[in-house]
Amino acid sequence: RPVPVVAIDGPSASGKGTVAARVAEALGYHCLDSGSLYRLVALAAMRAGVSFDDEPGLARLAATLPARFAEGRVFLGEEDVTDAIRTEEASVGASKVAVLAEVRAALLDRQREYRHAPGLVAEGRDMGSVVFPDAGTKIFLTATAQARATRRYKQLIEKGMAANMKSLLKDLQDRDARDAARPVAPLQKLPDAALLDTTEMDVEQAVGFVLDRVRS
Ligand code: C5P
Image (cartoon, rainbow, N blue to C red; front, side, top):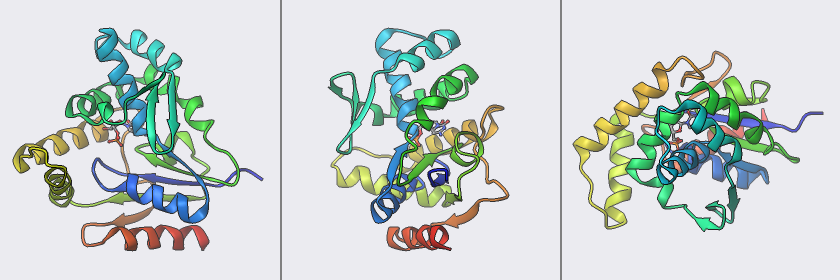
């Protein structure tokens, strides 16, 4: 029997990372944050001086990326880059390298390697469509752009960082547009995915919704 997969796809800042981690914990499954791989490629490219339109160069970086995940931290080689991949620059870079077919192809097998017993919760944009099309549970997790921008705003303020609601909203909308409009692996709600709109929900309720789906 194939190892079960729970695929959670959705737009930026929808809270899918938090929900996926909590669902994985509840089920005792492994968890894959696929967006961090695209973020790592962008970071590695910025450091190596590889341009975001050099597709073969970026694909080579993606294929040889010394990515490692341990105890909730993300490493590039020996370096802890958990915060470095979350900067606005790395976020924009990630959504730019993610439009390139060769980069996506280079990351495909690497993502599938996370499928280990007893199961995997994978979150991103194309988990249910491309990487794990046979996933037993598929969720499209979303919220209005306004709600997502507000959550991101609160997070930044809580961390004592500067935040501007108007530019946060615009960045989100630009990234959503790039993710949805690209020809390769666009962000989409699949017909066989359950729609989970968290605009009016807290994390607890969203986690409960996914667990109900997995168990039914
Ligand atoms: O989910 P996260 O915001 O960390 O993803 C960063 C970027 O990586 C997204 O804006 C998207 O362009 C890209 N991505 C993707 N496919 C995935 C996960 C992320 O194209 N499965």
